[in-house]
Amino acid sequence: MKLIRQGLPAILLGFAGAAPSPAAPPRPTLVVAISVDQLSADLFAQYRSSFRGGFARLATGVVFPSAYHAHAATETCPGHATLLTGMFPAHSGIIGNDWYDLDAPRADKRIYCVEDERAPGSSSRRYSVSLAHLRVPVLGDRMKQADPATRVYAVAGKDRGATTMGGHQADQSWWWRDGGFVSYAGRASHGVVDGVNAKLPQDIPSAALRSRVTLDEATLDVAAGFVERDGLGRGKATDLLAVSLSVTDYVGHSHGTGGPEMRDQLVALDAALGRFFERLDATGVTYAVMLSADHGGHDTPERDRERGIPEAARIAPDLNVAALNAALGGARIMGTIGSDLYFPDKTLIPAARDWLLRQPQVAAVFDAATLAATPIPKSAPPESWSLAERAAASFDPERSGDLMVLLKPHVIPLAKPPLTTHGSPWDYDRRVPLLFWWRGIDGFEQPGSILTVDIAPTIAGLIGLKVAPDAMDGRCRDLLPGPESSCP
Ligand code: ZN
Image (cartoon, rainbow, N blue to C red; front, side, top):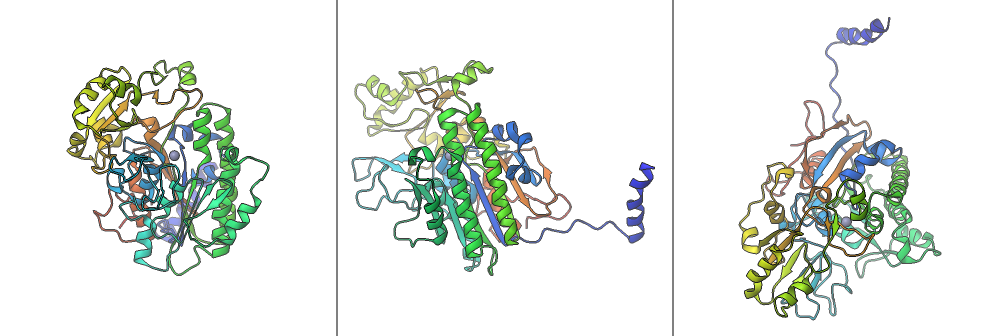
């Protein structure tokens, strides 16, 4: 009986002619690009089965559980700059959250990735925000170039998230700072932002708010408000809304990823994303969502040691730039061990390299000439890249250090428990989930690895934006499971 019932539709279809091929998706009029700061592929896998809200909806779409930030310096600014430019940090110019310019005409030689160095009195700590360091266009810039009617909006918990995803010509770009959402100097206020700022809880200190899901909820409140009030997705051209949610990162840094704090954050964020999508549904706009992360992360070394990773450790107390400078007789090297080192006196580079290679926690030391000569293996699976290749994808000849120092796996360059951090060339920091969803999507899961530089060309394909084949480091990935293709 059961068999007959199951057989019937096929017979009927047979009489009606060939089975209809699934329709290509209606072209979205709004692209919603979301970054969840520090959402590693490992965390997504760990909590995937318990999601009921926004993450669960996205998981019914196209799922790439192993997307790679292929570069070595897995920090927030380079990661966000990679997501929508389709370019490695080596080409976007955003090689880290900070770098050093020994020739900078100021006492503070450290440069923040989205500071405006030209502003009088700017330093890496007190700066006005600018995207001047980003050397390439962002997806929104390309969309506007193709059709000036396109609107590009961005909102984030961090300035480096909103600016690098929104791009050079974003109509609206807002980030949270000291108690409210702010924008570039001189920008007019926006009613949606004013409304959300007025609703922010006044009883939570500013510094504490950023570690609570409240900040992610406020960020999503601004984003949904933009769609509702300004009619994103209802104009003459495809619009782009970029959102970066920062709280997962703050929770990870403060508590690690393996405890109840991260569980509570992801459960709350899943629910908040669900409510956000319901608000977008209510507008009736045909939207497509991309969600990924700027980098991965991992647990504290203390808890990792108790959970099967005996080599997990904090950096040795005598492995730091001060100790290196002392060992070289009072040198003035700047930077960080675990990242780039800058030498005012280049003659000290060989001795410094010898000292570094004697340290048991150091995995590799590369000089600038080596990285400049190392090709980035775009077409090789990112999990197979050598350390030099990962470092080369983070190398900019003008901004990178004289030496790049990489620590061994599970060595955390922070001394104080329970603090932890990302930024390493190891896969727990490189690997992030990548999800695409739109209403009616014929979803599938592709376990093979993909590069995060593929995101921008993939979205371009989905919305019919023409991009020259060599204009980005990544390539378009087909999001339609049948013979049709979402790529040109
Ligand atoms: Zn980050």
